[in-house]
Structures are given as structure tokens and as C-alpha cells.
Length: 168
Length: 263
Image (cartoon, rainbow over all chains, first blue to last red; front, top):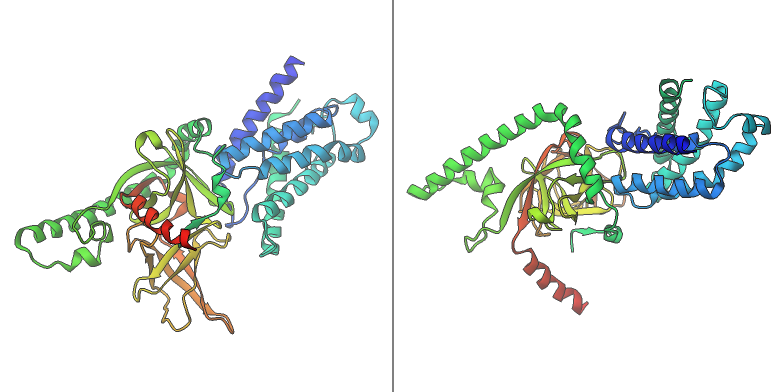
């Protein structure tokens, strides 16, 4: 328990700092910028209660907001992610895996499964985030393309990070 | 007011001018700014050289009263900081950029100086004499700056050649281009025209460079040009900035608020 608390606190701090100190400065082709910090919500154990997910999502989003001067945008999106995570996980994984494995990892699940799992959440997150940030339908397709391309980069980063840091 | 920023800014709580995020930015900014230092150095040296030249002209004017057009034309930083009563109105200090973004719709910068170092809200921020943004939130030791690259900020600007003014804003797309609006169709505009500040807002001296007209078009049936302006500042590599304080801003604002009360 304490072990888990330490581990996830560490993931939280590292992903927030990596996001605000490094990744926020990335801008490819003048439109693509990844949001990697979502990985924290993705890696939480299967049995995390929904209320806890929403609360952690709020804290995570608020920490990002505090660094990027976007008060509330990231917090709102992460709360949504926390809210939908249990339902989506129920849809894409079986009861047996959820009981035998503690948390979604590439080492315990298959690569394909992890990629699609990441892709679902990153898509929801990025679409909501870029729409909320723009808060207008003016230039809708520009926003959409930005969200999709940034999403692809985020997925790649999250999957690669699995190979680098969470190998067992 | 010509310069407005949305009441979004009144969310003063949890911005990057607070102590914790300021601390992280202060300590990590250096790591990435190392790559921009060479360029920053060159820019500073160039600005120094220009100011030295201006200083010579200035001293010359003091001694033998020779008319030097250099001061009024070439270097607004020196010429325009004095008013007609020969009193200095604008004061400059420097600060280091510790956080900056260009990848959002609403970009801000964080500076390593705050209230304790004399930074106040509404101070203008310039880099090598070119407009960067406006101080919005001030913490004890850090402050945040709303950048030109923020859809919520409009700045009054004019075409240097013919003094027609409009409002400058960003459409959220390309971090190298901003848009100048409200220039009526009868005004002669050319590619390569310099766009400068008007000084209406009081936060910037008149005539600071913003950028150069790169493209303009007149929509059918429109009374106003759509003008794209290439920014003079490269927002991806700002390291050092100057803060401009207008010591008379309080008086100007007080006076102008009288007009608003009458509605």
C-alpha cells in the first residue's frame, strides 16, 4: 500500500514536471504539442474507485493549469477522463484480467491492447482539451487537426515510456 | 480602452507567478535557454551598439546644439521617452524569462521579478526594443506576462509610414504572425511596411517596433484590410526582456476613467 502510494506519487510528480518543463516547449510544424501527463491517470490500478479517479484527475489537471496559466482547462478534461475510465476499462478488458493483474501495463497486457487503451483516452483528452482551449468553432478544422496530430505524438510518447520505465 | 484584456485575467489565483511554479521555472529555465544564449548575446550586442550610437548623437546635441534627426527617427527608445516638458516618462528595467510558451491559444510568459523588485501590473514588456507583451499578474518574486500570442489581448498599433492605426491581435495559428485589423481600405498598405506601437495604451512608448507587413488583402465588400504582420521578436528564443514603466499611467487611467463614468 505504502509502496504503491510512493510509486504513484513519483509517477505523478515526474509526469507533471516532464510536461511543464520539457514537453510544453515542444511545437512541431507550428501546431503539434504533446500532452504526456495523462499517463498518470492511465497507469492507476484497476480497482481505483471512481471518486478517487475524479479527485486525482482534478489535482493532476490543476497542477498542470498552475504552470501553464490555463486555469481550469486541464482540470476539467482530466476530471472527465477520471469519470469515464472505469466504464471504458470494463468495456475493453475482461473480468479475469482485471482480477489477476493489478494495473494496466504493457508488460502484463499485450502491446496492441495497451496502444488501443492509450489511444481511446488520449483521443478523448485531446479533443476536449483543444476544443475547450479554443472555445470557439471558428477554425474548427484547424483545431481538430491539431488535436489529432498532437494526439498521435502523445500516444507514441506514452507507449515508448512504457518500454523505457515500466519494464519488468 | 484600446488595449483590453479579458476578465479571464482576474483569476489571479494559481497562475505561474506563484512561488512554487516560479521556483521550478526559475531553476529549470536555464537548462533550455542555454541553446538560445548565443542569439540572445548577439541581439544584446546589437542593441548596445545602436544605443551607443544614439548616445553619441545625444551628447552631440547637448554640446553644440546641432540638429540630429537620428534621435527622432532611428531610435524611439530614446526619442519618445521624454514628453514635451522634457520630463522622463518611461523607465526601463530588465528581467529574465523563466517560462514561455507558443503552443497554446493563450500564451503567457513568466518573469523572474515581482512586486518586491518593483514590477507592477500593466507594465509593458519589450525584447531588444520590440513588443513582447504586458504584465498581468504580479507575485512577490515572479510575474506573468500576457504575450502578443494570446487571443485575449489586443494591442493598438499603427503603420509607421502613414500613421494609420488599428488593433493588433493573434488568431491562434502561427506563432510568427499576428493580424492587424481595422485599417480602412483607402489607406495605402505595402508589403514590408513596419508596424509600430501607437502609445495610446500608455504601457508602451510610441513607435516601438512590432513587426513587418507580410501579406494583406481586402475581402470582397469589406471596408477593412486583413493584414498579416511578421513579428520582429522570435518568441521561441526570448531570454532577456526589458520592462517599461510609465510613471504617468496612473494619472492617465484616472483621467480616462472619468470618461467611462459618464457613459
